[in-house]
Length: 349
Image 1 (cartoon, rainbow, N blue to C red):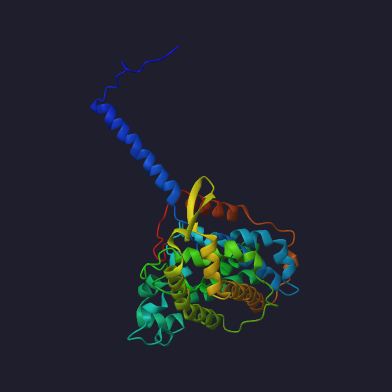
Image 2 (image 1 turned 30 degrees about the vertical axis):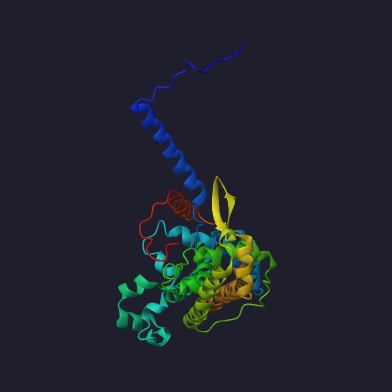
């Protein structure tokens, strides 16, 4: 049986045309969102922060390592809590970075212009200015003091939470792009380099890194330690940016990005080939910064324990984290997932 379409008529009414337009627009939006959702970056990236905290456990001496091994999953999983907390706690964001180049005058060394002690820095620049441009070295010192007090009180909840949090902030201080106002290459037409350096590269190449750093050591002056790490990171900042710019100038533009399934979305990411070339150009910088963060975290955990009088952590063996701590973390996780931001100013990737 043959069908003839000669007599079939399609009526193009204004309402039907508008409906078609709306459908086409909706399809375009969905495809655009699906294919161009940016790769999110949270400091080192969730993967790297967890890996750094986990490996720091193995730097600890007898008297500590048994306790931390028992709670290694907590220390690992909650390494990313401070990033989630940016969506739930006001003034969290400045604790993750310091735009030290904001304090450079006439090309001078910003570290000579910035007092290392908090009170001196406040007297010179005001507290509002410091918070606007990041406070990570001072916050590391604060967290060491809090962890020391938690050890002294044998407070399981606080020991675990402060240990995980301290590891996060130390890790952040080791990231070159956490020390500059050009934190995401937005000032040099390199937007996206933040997540590229600290998330994409570790995700691709971390299995080849050497994580043995030796044993944790006592750090007499945690604030100076934090500033020294920030200064190291800042000294590497130019290489991070310049090497990527050089690679971008010669690498085939149609091969710079690729697409990967991330959950329910197709995300655009830096391609494996582009990432590999960038990693080679940096001659192991990401691995070195991760290794330095690992030994630094273990050393400051150890320092806090020593300063607390080396309490016997085996006395906490039969304790479990409180229901209150579980609820606090559930609430932070909920705020993060829903995307409700109270105050997240500073280094938005």
